[in-house]
Length: 280
Image (cartoon, rainbow, N blue to C red; front, side, top):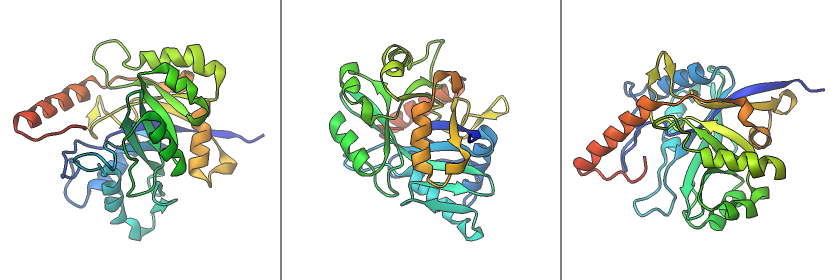
């Protein structure tokens, strides 16, 4: 029998506040942004932790696509000469061998039937926005891992279960006592857990790299994913398999109230100053 190891996975983090046409606002001196980020991930998720950095807009968005993951890769490339940051599989993810952390590219795409959360699209390519079927088909054609962040039409989601690897059943960006993904959680327990191999994950949904009570927002909500120690070579295949097996029993659920309130205040100020910020 193969002894499994568990990787803590935060499947949705926006890296930092990013206005259209600007770089992510990481609180670190120029040239040290990646080091700051990598240290935060290691503290928040531990050894072999995995974080998904999410691009917000599709390639065909009216104001252009969002490429904050690619920006981070460029910053990581400044230390690649030390041969500790290794970009893999068309730039879909990379591994930092010094910090022992994984970073995977993600993208969130809103459709009339559901908000899809996709992992592992190629570097420099964002999925186009469209209807549910179009986005799902393009994700699979590009070798990515599609899942659901929010459900609007349960019927539509149930029609495409075999093509989905996971659903977000808990998100840390909440105000008050109620889980904003309680509808998704209920559907997983009532339908998905019984009918198909679709996992349930928790994500922070964090907007920055700040700390709260000595712990970073990255990793405050996470899922423990089961990886086979003998199959670490193919990371994305392994990630999809682990996501499909994830359950709410393997989640850490901690709301990030302060981060949500801080981000809302900043977005309000941006609008008052005339800086349009349609997505993150």
